[in-house]
Image (cartoon, rainbow, N blue to C red; front, side, top):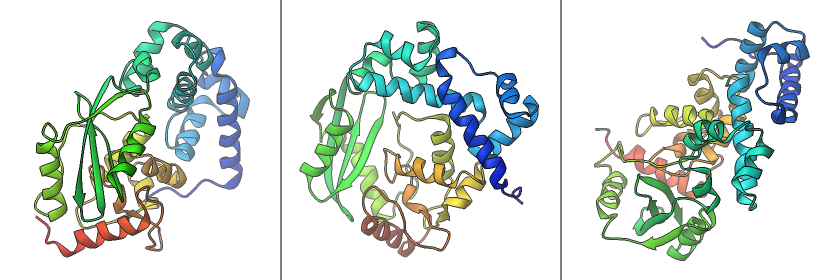
Length: 283
């Protein structure tokens, strides 16, 4: 049984601590002792309270904030060194040790707009047109649209400086797996992925992968499953930023009252995907 939700005063206190962390990224690691002094709590108690409200530890939250600042700097054209300094990374070794793994590539590659080379293919599917894109490491993007032009434009917007080329033949084995999935013959997709994610996003996506074919969970249930019962909105954001629709089945997450909410491909597609799964017998 999940612990009771924290009261409003606790949530407000943690919100202030989040503001404090974001404001002090330039000063290096924000210690539990410093946060405890700021909040008037012991470091151990602060760690528990913070993780319960936010869903991650203060250190992971600071890492995520630092990474977001780095990505913003790189996207607007700052040099790697300038973006590194502005984000609060104390040295280039620390940057490559921590940030590169979370970016899924080196900061220099990210600055170019994504992986050096991305191949893609499109096909008809039960909810319109589907686009699957991949790097040499694995699938980095899967989305739906009404036309190939629409889906390709979304891909190029996500990776604005990558070398993008159509490769229907090379991606056919993965597209065939996807077609089998839509037909109900391959209910669990086990395809290689190359996606960027924060630690929290990965926890949410792992929870989505655990939702059985043909079933749904509420955002609240997902939050409880990852041990962060109050992080419902953060779970919803993690679902909304899932770059590989269907492979990570964010369409299986619904509102607590059973309503269909928040799907990047459109609620009509979410509805059709769920209806399709419900009609097919489980393997």
